[in-house]
Every structure is written in C-alpha cells, then in structure tokens.
Image (cartoon, rainbow, N blue to C red; front, side, top):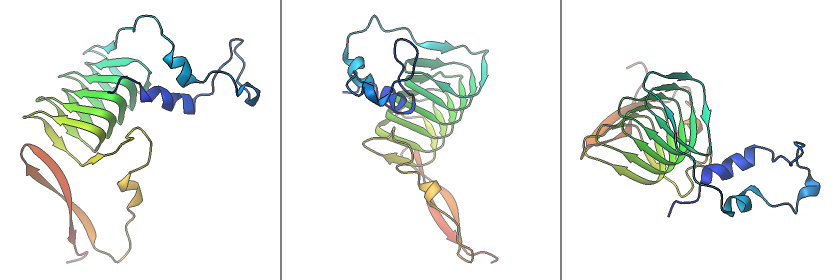
Amino acid sequence: MFSKSRINELNARTDQPQQKGGASATPANANAPSATSAAKQPAGPKPPASVLSADLVVTGNLKTTGDIQIEGTVKGDIYAHLLTVGENAIVTGEVVGDDVIITGKIKGRVRALKVRLTSTAQVQGDIVHKALAIESGAHFEGSVVRQDDPLSEGKDDRRAQQTPVIGQPKQKQATVAAAGQSQTTPKASAVGQ
C-alpha cells in the first residue's frame, strides 16, 4: 500500500534535475523522462539503512531518499523514506518520511504517511499522518491531524494560522488523557484577572 516513496517526489520538486554532462536541465528537455518515471525502472538491490550509532551526536538537518536508523542524538530536521528512531535515540526537530517508527524520544513535529509509536516511544509535538498506530505504553503530548497527503508542507499548520489579537483572551493548552493517548484542547482565560 505504501511501497512508492513520496519523499522522492518532494525532492524532485525542490532539486533541479541534472543532465549526464552535469549541466542543469532546461525547458528544452521537457520530453526527457521525469524523476518519477525513472523511479519505476528496476534498480539494483535496495541499499541498507544508514545507521547513526548511539555515541553519535548530529547537529543539523539530515535528508535522504533512503532509510535511516537513529540510535544517537539528532538536533535538526530529518527527511527520509523510512525512519526508525531507536529506543535510546533522541531527536529534536521535525521528522518527515513515508514511514516513521518511533521507539525513542522525539521533540518536534512528525509528518509521515505511516507513523508507529511503540510502547517505549516518547513524542512531544504534533503528528500529521495518513495512518497512525500507537501501542499501549507510548507517551504522546501534542495534537494529531490526519491528512491524505501529510508530506505536503504547510497544508494544515494550524499554529502558523493562529495569530493573537490584542484585547482578546489568551489561549492556554490543557492536556487531556484518554485511553493511553493525550490530546490538547484550548482553554480560554481572561488577561489581567
């Protein structure tokens, strides 16, 4: 069901394709095969996942069309096809991928077609997904939004759309626990009371 990597399509939109000679593609090459049709051609064996070991601390963004297994600490955004966050791993930043499996800690937004929080997962941030599985024992604080295309940026960034109005009551967030899951609900309180 999720065999086609959507992260590759996002990369094709942002990166300008290269010709064999290293020159940039021009509009004259409009009849050339696109990145998505090239992806349909059989390639060699799938490369193994890149592993960031437990003693590794990465500061900065990671971007790949392949798979990543995080066992260490990453302070930055991660873009991958399949991302596995190990039990002792800590990720601070946004996580984007086709399939995200979390057994460690993430502090930041998660956007993926499939998201799985195992029983040892700890997530502080919003999850935008097409399919979501949360095992009993997982810890989650944030909001959950289901979208048909969660890899599209900015479609449903509710926080960016909310702007405070002077003279209006401030919004506070309250955490409500239900069946091992948490969700946030706004509570209004008057300013200066």
